[in-house]
Amino acid sequence: MKRWAGAILAVMTIIAGIAGFWLSRPLFAQTVYAGVTIGNIEAGGKTREEITQLLITWQKDHQTNPLLLSYETTTFRIEPENIDYTVDAEITADAVWQFGREGPWWDRLKNIHKAQTEGWSIPPKVKYNETKLDSILVQLQDSVNRPPRNATLSLQTGGIIAEEEGRQLDLDTLKNWIETALIRMDGGSIVLPVMPVKPEITTYDLSKNGIKELVAMYTTSFNTDDVNRTANVRLSAQKINGKLLYPGQTFSYNDTVGPREKSQGFKEAMEIINGEFVPGIGGGVCQVSSTLYNAVILAGLNIVERTNHSKPLAYVPLGRDATVVYNTLDFKFVNDSTSPVMIMAETVGNKLNVGIFGQRALDKNIDVVIASERAIQPAIVKKADPELAPGEKKVEKPGKPGYEVVVMRVIRDNYGNELKREVLSRDKYAPDNTIVRVGPEPSPVQAEKQPAFKTPPVITPKVPEKMPKTTNRQ
Image (tube, rainbow, N blue to C red; front, side, top):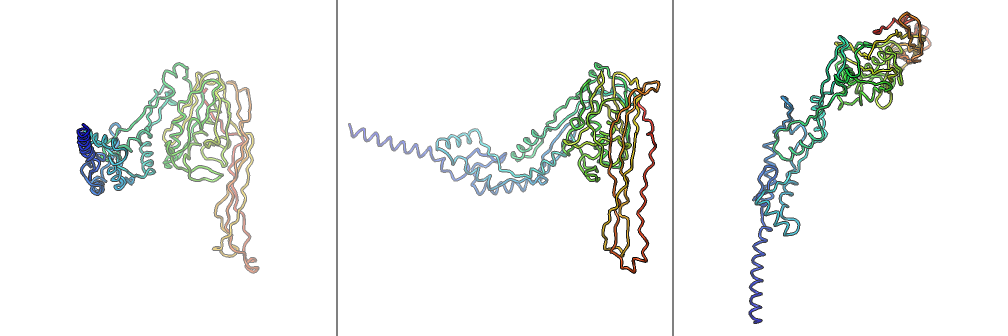
């Protein structure tokens, strides 16, 4: 009996060994397991070296396949070379080869069987220049994005201009989709994820609030040949257009217009920084804030925060500007009237028109006048110039005067009787210094022959004692 038991045990051991060997045979395959793919490339049955070569060949054949991004009837292309797109053949081949060769043997067998019956895709290791991709997506965003337009009243006719829905490209979602497409290695097309942006003010809101009358308007001019600055003026005007303020509500220019960044649609143009005109993102937004400031003071509303520029400007009189710097200097006013008001801003040709609408026109007249003005003469700054002859002097940059000015708002009734006189601002504008290049000191003999240098005259513009009356609609 013991002999039979021993024989049976020996046979079972042999059978178990044969079965185990048979079952474990897949674990020792010399090629990639069947059913394994890299993206849409079949890798099963190939050696590691063959996989590496396959990826190198694929990249040569498909490097020029663009990724197509479509929205409505427009298609945008992203060329692989424009984002330095490549597939890391060595790392990807390692990942493919290790499939079914790592982990407990029962997990390995299960995965090998699943690859054979259902397929198993291994994503390639791709590389691309994220900075270049982000730059392309920002340009794409500029083409697709459109801010919503609030319902407003026309400055020309007084009629209602209906609201318009905006749109915004979902950059985070799009970037994820692009990364997925790059990993698929098949190029292809993506429909852009564009989200609607609802306007804040609708035609119904205007009708409900009874806003129908133009209270005050102010107009400034700009140079349309300066394309970038013009774009910033128009964009800023769009952002404040249709802004509705209820009684007691404060308007913030910075909160409404937002950060002056390229991603927000602003462009590089000249602006004043530390008293000098230099290139900066958003040059021109101060013309919109200054034009709005004038419309607001003519509407009789209360100013909460306003700062003048460091230098006089051409598009508004002295003391009538309002500079803004995001997160630093803001222009704010409060609707201290008893009914809602709305800002309307538009550009027509080279004109920027900003109006304040309300339920009724003003029952008074408002004038803005300069109460006092004092010119500040420029200093003379000498710069040594060894290229000039001894004792020679040349004016490199003529100076311009600065000013100290006090501006007042005068309110009268319809019969001309003065109701109120208030100081709006006390401003100081720095002069532009005269820059003179000076040659080396002359010898004593030469000095007798040299005529005395005369300081170039500084011409101070003649300003009338009282500014021309600025009208507002009654």
